[in-house]
Length: 197
Image 1 (cartoon, helix red, strand yellow):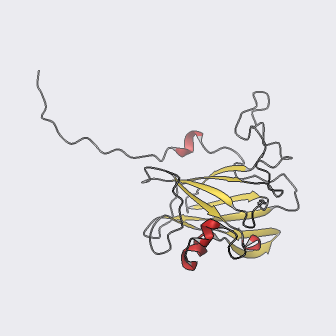
Image 2 (image 1 turned 120 degrees about the vertical axis):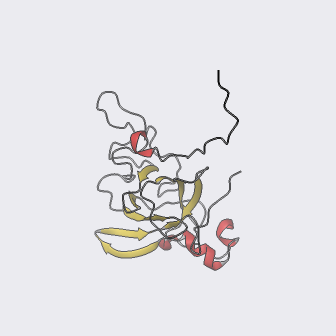
Image 3 (image 1 turned 90 degrees about the vertical axis):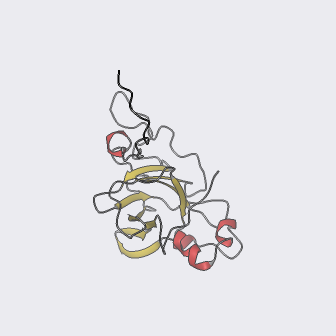
């Protein structure tokens, strides 16, 4: 029997393994079909060098326009009869979305503007991407819902340049109001990420 000398443990990578089971059809369709309040939110995920990341996965959670966090139960639970998703019936607001980035690092969701008891409603975002040992959390604030001074503890704790990384930018309308929110994982334009440890 030959004994090998101890050597370094091979490095391990965290994914990406998202394409097999985590994305699901219409994962970015959070708004009920035909709801006149629907807005589009889209953007790109960039690495520290400014290159788009083609295999990231983003999850979104938010309150409904009334501020309710109830959402539609079963947004990810399969209906054994139809093969669809129980909470995604096209009628109820889900409050949850999950989308992968495409080959160009682009993502998009259709949702309703978030409401909240506070003056600064937001959309919570969780970012999964290669090279990340832990997922990252951030927020999207829509410019139309911009908070007044002193209304949001997170925004108030940031200097203005860093605060801007949390605001989506309104784009020319093309049917529905549309906002762009790019996520920069590192670098000069790094998005503000939250620490929930």
